[in-house]
Length: 99
Ligand SMILES: [Zn+2]
Image 1 (cartoon, rainbow, N blue to C red):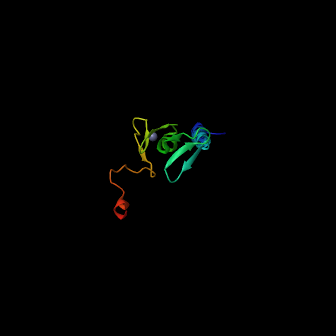
Image 2 (cartoon, rainbow, N blue to C red; image 1 turned 45 degrees about the vertical axis):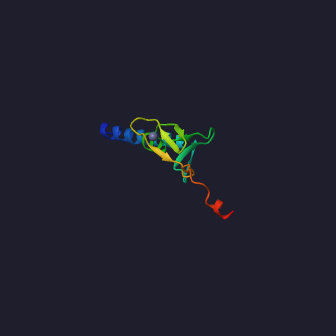
Image 3 (tube, rainbow, N blue to C red; image 1 turned 90 degrees about the vertical axis):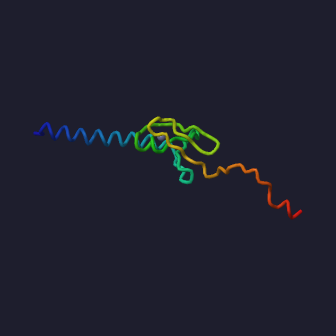
């Protein structure tokens, strides 16, 4: 016979592995972009916050800004910088002196 404590423990293990599974299935809908450091939805190609997705199991779409992506979840509030973004400079091209 099982003791109640053991049964409860078994349920706890089952429960945690179940939520891990659900998280895993959720993450499978996304692809992680190593260079940018954010997740993209495979179908819609929308950027999602990896911090929320991994640690909190929340699907938080990132808000696109000119220089990166902002997470909208209040207690996360992470900002991901787009490495391709270059600040606009007012400098004239240096080559013009050569002409
Ligand atoms: Zn987030």
